[in-house]
Length: 286
Ligand code: NAI
Ligand code: GGE
Image (cartoon, rainbow, N blue to C red):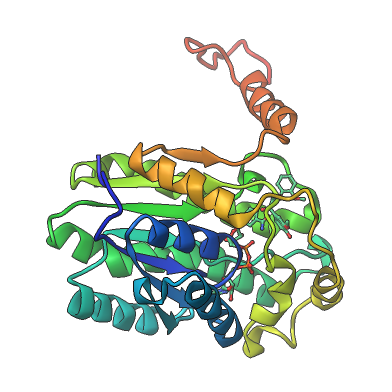
């Protein structure tokens, strides 16, 4: 069943210096957790620290620079959390990039960037922190930010993004029963549109995956996109997550706006599915 209170717990939030991650970090801190924000971007970390200082909560938060795609850096981060805090209670695998671009123009640099951060970064979180979360014996919770993009058929320009999010979603679903035996809860955050800096995705692309990218124009265009005024506030998402963690909910869904597309996808799979007692026979035609 995992976590029953946030008071005195230690949380590790990747991509915690901006957007959804920052919203989650703020709510966990307000509810008494010690929060380590781990993020790629020094500028976001600086802004986040100013936010916490303004709220008089500087003593509840610490920050570190971390690229979730670096396994060595992640191992170091986990060792530091063990040494300084006696291990983490709540791991929030939130760092992600909203990469988009024409699928016919996508290069390996684009696949490596998208899957590297959105899938690889999450797996690195599990591999780095799960051993200490099991070993300390207190139980805990792992929340992973996927997307409603994982639950609908997305347009081609979001194919890599959607595939990376579907992968983490199915991974989390599959490991949940095994982790439950260790008193570690698992939740998947499935957000719709949230106010954030996801339009800065191009800035989060590492140099070595830049030159060969086919998404340069798309990322430049995305960088000019305005944040929608009707999109959800990250702190509202944070409150939904806090509730979902305490209830050990598998899915935390922020919006109902994609219901029809979600239903259409599920229905299409079921419509292609034979009856439970169906067996392909010699006389059947395909
Ligand atoms: P954001 O860009 O405001 O925040 C993401 C943070 O992650 C940034 O501070 C960035 O510096 C950091 N980051 C990026 N790459 C990293 C890396 N390799 N290592 C460590 N940190 C890294 O964007 P947002 O929207 O808050 O994104 C958070 C998560 O939410 C992502 O996984 C995204 O895919 C997901 N999401 C966002 C939605 C939205 O509408 N904003 C909707 C559905 C999912
Ligand atoms: C708000 O910005 C983004 C973005 O740039 C990339 C991805 C997402 C938001 C989300 O993960 C989701 C929810 O908004 O993407 C979608 C999910 C379902 C249908 C359409 C989506 O985006 C167009």
